[in-house]
Length: 226
Image (cartoon, rainbow, N blue to C red; front, side, top):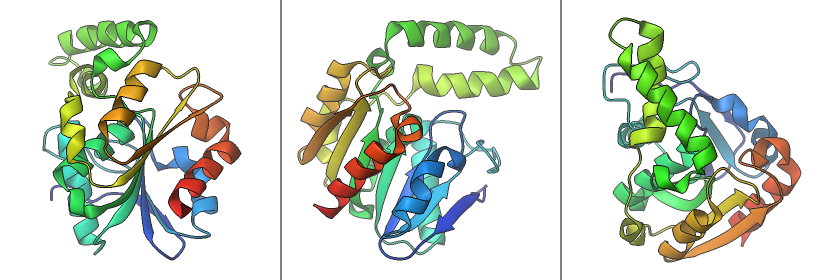
């Protein structure tokens, strides 16, 4: 393992790992950590190259982040855990649950997508334009290289086929905002492709966990306790 994750740890009980989105860090879950830690052992981690976790030397991809998560669980001696992933964190959780199904207890996917086509064009097109410009200057500028890597996660990843979701063994909650940047039909496709899943839409945009923590937390706790 070429990196050591920074993480916030709180609570006791069954472990639940929180995975933030692109360009963010564990602080995104400020509205969830205290609430969930009343019943669960919470680990909110900064993924590779995000927050206080170093970039390291390995590839900067969703699949590498999933492998990093496996190593993190091994280091922390976590045999199985609930996973709550937001946006790119949800994409990491999807890939992880496919590759390491026996490591996942319950799975919560918030605003995840299988490929760039799942994102609304009004959001995805500027991302792709920014990625092209950043990549063009990446060899001359460290900041451009870092920006190209971040945007590349939303242009080149995760590229999971719907059929692959059948490999997920965990009971799953798919949750998104009514005005999410992920297309509604794409969210419904994810839910319908996972064998044992529930689908919930909450009023709001992509950032429902941060903007509407009470409603989001209640949906998560209802699912975990069901």
